[in-house]
Amino acid sequence: QVQLVESGGGLVQPGGSLRLSCAASGFTLDYYAIGWFRQAPGKEREGVLCISSFDDRRYYADSVKGRFTISRDNAKGTVYLQMNSLKPEDTAVYYCAKGERGPRACSAGMTDWGKGTLVTVSS
Image: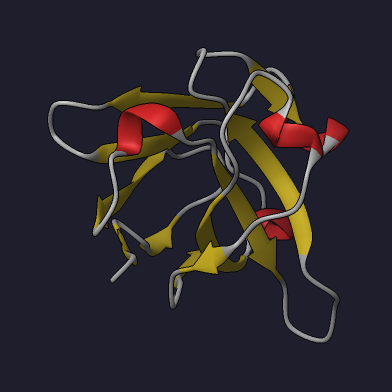
């Protein structure tokens, strides 16, 4: 079955960097979009970034533009979220999710979710 496992979270100081990984199994990653989402304490879940199977990227959150990037290594079955210049307001549980096939998949809904990894930005 579809499995998505996030890793790479932790405690980092403001201005620091982290790279999150999303290990995908149970499906052929090459054909599907993968999105990163986050949920801060007391807030609703929000979209961060998405990458389609065509390597098109869509930013869901303007607040991460210029700081976060997304990439995929289909051979390794992994999607990465590189987070630079981290701010305390980036503190959240980060989730990856499997989307649909096709070039517009990042504009559609997600079908499967990982359990998340906690990122804490604090001095």
